[in-house]
Every structure is written in structure tokens, then in C-alpha cells.
Length: 96
Image (cartoon, rainbow, N blue to C red; front, top):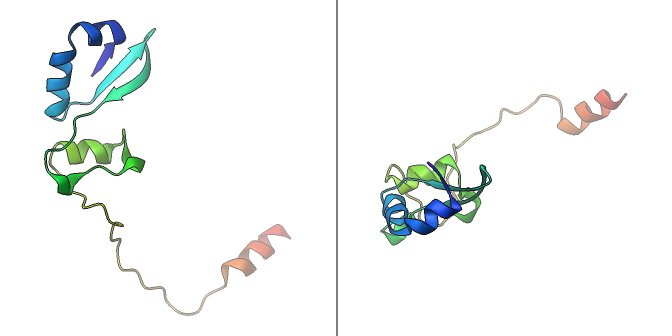
């Protein structure tokens, strides 16, 4: 949802209430986004990582669809097959 700075100042309580429910409020100046108002999740275990601010991940966390405990995310456990051409060799070949 986009709202002008003037509208935000006049109805701040209403927009803070919307942000608490998970709505992301984009603040505009001269019709250009300049800031976002995003609610803080209620539980300490779902603190939003600073690198995800404004992202879809933050919106998902704010809606309660995901949680983040503050640690490094666990990715897929990938194992690479032995063999193949080394990346350094591929780069050198591409350079000519």
C-alpha cells in the first residue's frame, strides 16, 4: 500500500495499526517511494534479518508464514559428484 508523507502524518495511528497486522506501507514523496513502514513481529523468535528488510521474506515473516531465529539459514544439503572440469580451467579456456 502506498501513502504520501502528508497522509501518513495525518493518519499515523491507522497506518501503524495496519503495519502491525502485516501490511507493508510504502511512504511516497512526489509519488516516488522513499520509505517503508513495516510492523515488528510479536515473538522474539521471528526477528527479521536486516538484509531482508523490504523483501518478500520480511512480508512472509510479518504474516506469520515463516520464522527466523537469527542464525544462519540451513540450505539444501548438496553433494557434488567427483570428477568434471575444474572451474578455474573452464575460466581460463573461456578467456582464450
